[in-house]
Structures are given as C-alpha cells and as structure tokens.
Image (tube, rainbow, N blue to C red; front, side):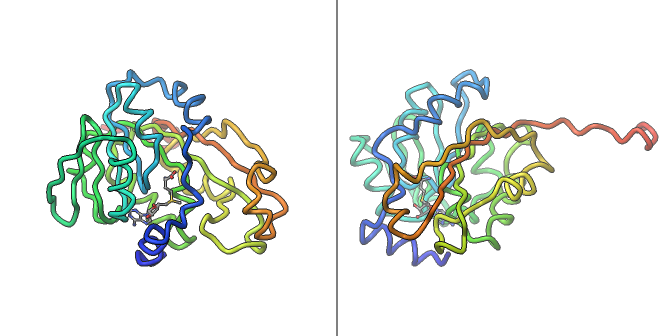
Length: 230
Ligand SMILES: C[S@@+](CC[C@H](N)C(=O)[O-])C[C@H]1O[C@@H](n2cnc3c(N)ncnc32)[C@H](O)[C@@H]1O
C-alpha cells in the first residue's frame, strides 16, 4: 500500500484493526516461545497496539516500528507513557521506559536497529501488506534478525474474491512458503471469527479464519549426499 493510504486511515481514525484489549492469543501462546522475559521483542507495523504494553509488563523491552505519527503519539498518550523523542536517520524515535517506537518506514530499518531484538510479534502486519510486498517484508525481517529469533504471527484467511484487502487473506500455504526456508513453523490455533466481526459480514465475507503461527529456529540439516565440510 502507498504510505498515504495508512496516513489517511490514521488521520480519519479508520482503525477497525485496533484492539482495545490485549490479544488473547498473544497471552496464551507467548509463553510457548520459551523466552526468559528479558529479551527485546520486535513488533513490526505496530500501530498503537496495547500488546506492546503487555509484552513490556512481562519484562521484555519492546521495539516497534510504525509509519503513522498519529498512531505513535496516540500510543504513548493513551498509555500515559511520557516519551522522549529524538531523530534517528529517517525515523523519529519515541522512547519511554523500555518501550521504543521508531516512527517511519519498516523497509528503512537496518541491522543496527534490530541488533538487540530476540523475538517477533506480528499481529495484522503481514496481512496488512499486498501480495507483492509480503515476500519483501519477510526477506527484510529474515535479513535483519538473528536466525534463532522466534515469534508469533497472527493472520486471517477468507475468500479474497469477496473483499479487497487490507486486511489481506494470507493462506497457510503462503505463510509456509514465506517462512519455512528460515524457520520451523507450527499453526497453533485456527478459528472462524466472522460471527464476532460483523464489519466483515457487512463487506460480504462468508468465512473469516484467524490463524496463529509460531515460528522458531530451524537448524539446517546437512544433505547426507554431500561430503562433510572440511
Ligand atoms: C493493520 S495495522 C496493524 C497494527 C498493529 N499491528 C495492530 O495489531 O493493531 C497495520 C499498521 O502498519 C502500519 N504500516 C503500514 N506500512 C508500514 C511500513 N512500511 N512501515 C511501518 N508501518 C507501516 C500502518 O500505519 C498500520 O498502523
């Protein structure tokens, strides 16, 4: 999507994707990543997600990236977090007690920005992107993160012919194709949530399946037909 699409959505407060409550799947499945609680968690395309506050309450340091200054300002104000704002390359860096949000373009992040991140939480981020951008998004993440970085991913599946995204339908097959080269991927939960989301029924959907994936380090197994490394 063009950045102006998202800027407009935030300026007009058209943010049906935002959840006032902490995501229940995050609360249920985050412990399965087996983290100590001291790791920095990277939250791409974070909006003003309160899930970041929950992750911080576990002890994690949190690093979000978000295009919209409206979203970032609201995040710190609504959670009553007094923020220090500094300029860092093309980003405005907002920081308050272990919570950092870089306001700018995800694709402008570099290795230095994510050097301390040891886990990822993606809710409604991959599915916010059109098909041609999704592989670019995953490649950028994989390039910047250490290979042993685990994470949770929350997606939706529906008949793409029934509605234009975002949110886009990202079928399990595509999730696996995007991630399986780099991670072991498990689908932990799958549920039709259409009845709880009348705004999507009004748009013509007949099914809306939310899926929760966990991705973890997949040590590369050596091809037995190849000679061992010297
Ligand atoms: C569907 S919302 C999801 C927000 C958040 N993950 C949540 O659960 O509420 C997608 C967000 O990604 C942001 N976004 C879109 N493209 C971006 C980019 N290239 N870099 C940073 N943020 C981006 C949008 O402004 C929007 O807030």
